[in-house]
Length: 241
Ligand SMILES: [Zn+2]
Image (tube, rainbow, N blue to C red):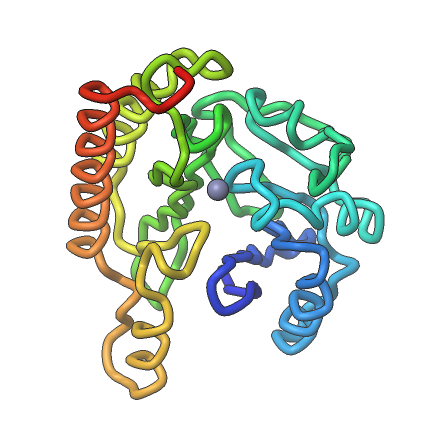
């Protein structure tokens, strides 16, 4: 598994003998940088066979339609995010979803297997991907966190467009806490302190991305932040609600 994204917007490439899987596309303007990273690894952009996303927000999926057109890759998206993925509204990818996924579904190619975990709230179909990867003789459990974040302005109490949103966040934290994690990754580099860990890995020594404690601490901190915001909104619902 390789990182081919930008400084903060993560794109992961899973290389297999039958072609590659890409998770996330970033914005349209990021596609040249992603292509360059794939080439620098010695792989071919045209070998992209499957496209996946963390969740249907533009910073992760705006270019999905472009990459799908250019590579002919099959797009697989959690069912609840399919309408947003196929939308042609401004900033939406307008892509064609080839396969709608459900919680626990697997995506397999050339001996690699990813598991889709529904972690809703941030979007209705927000997906946390897990995969077992080999590092030397070790098998590591990789977790790519979809997003546990409550963005500013998100309505958790009385949300007419998403009535079950708070309960979905509660479910998401239970799922995240249940996942075995060695390799802590996510949709943004900031989730797992990528810049600092990258500096450490360049300096040599053990792989800082193997960080089960960091994962646990991150999920707990994000869960506390969610509960704090939920509590705040329950006391004083947002204006207009
Ligand atoms: Zn998002």
